[in-house]
Image (cartoon, rainbow, N blue to C red; front, side, top):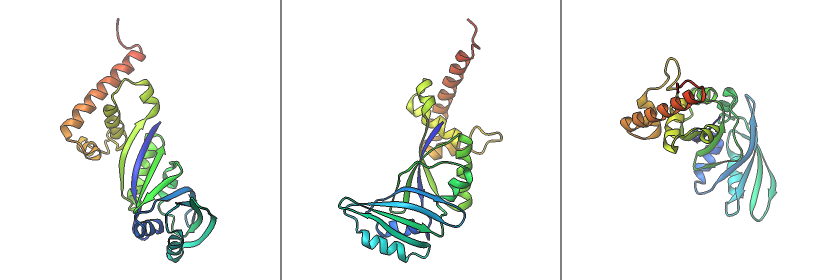
Length: 215
């Protein structure tokens, strides 16, 4: 199953984006969170050295926050429970059926997410991000089971997995070779050559396992 690492840009007007941009040097660690269509509830951890009182005041003052409760205030960290009336950041996950790995961190308006889901659900998540107007960058995607079994280089795995994620192999195609190259930040010619080598390796491996090759 593919494992994707994303950087998600929190839209303006969403409390955790606004507050984390205001306190740009601090790390906001979300330990857990869940949402329905109207509200979201979660636990937020702040490390020692942050101005937790100022952050809590900023959260409380935000128009989308309904409640903030301090659950723990220790020497090394602070744990806050929050409730928001606008859980838009979690709704694409909910609508696409993609589980999010916790904890995840937000710093200066950018959330770092790790996801494990079938390729079709990752594609659905991409569509939901677009529908909700949320920008994201695919930092890395790889199939851990396939990595253990297939003789591809790490670069070939990254290129092939990205091609799958952006819809290059859909029928009809949702993405072109240029789209794959742009997603990876590499030249189209490099992408084409690497992808061709990866495809050849995968096909040869499949043919051997399926006993399609004649002796």
